[in-house]
Length: 104
Image (tube, rainbow, N blue to C red; front, side, top):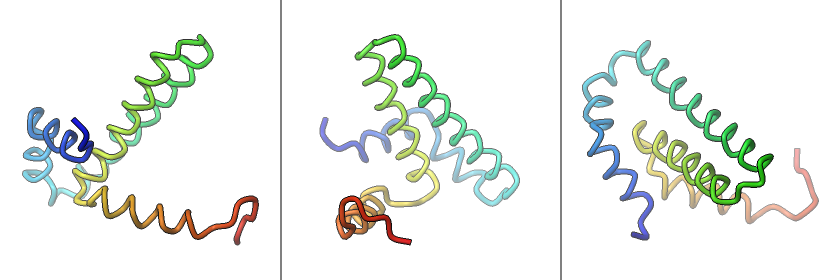
């Protein structure tokens, strides 16, 4: 499996994420809560990754970083952002910067 975007799509299908989102997307209050939940899961995965680092556990560091990617990319996907397009846009913006130069 080399298509992470498709893998996340398949996870969302398996666990009913996309259907739940589509059924509830017009409820702005619920969507705010859902986005907050997704972001808190990203924070939790980052905290677990830091803990794995402090415990010098390389396997758990990798696991945590991948889980962080899954939640971050999955959040983009479920909210209708094409993660591949977003990646390309951010990548190009980052590549246009010069090392060591912070632009305003």
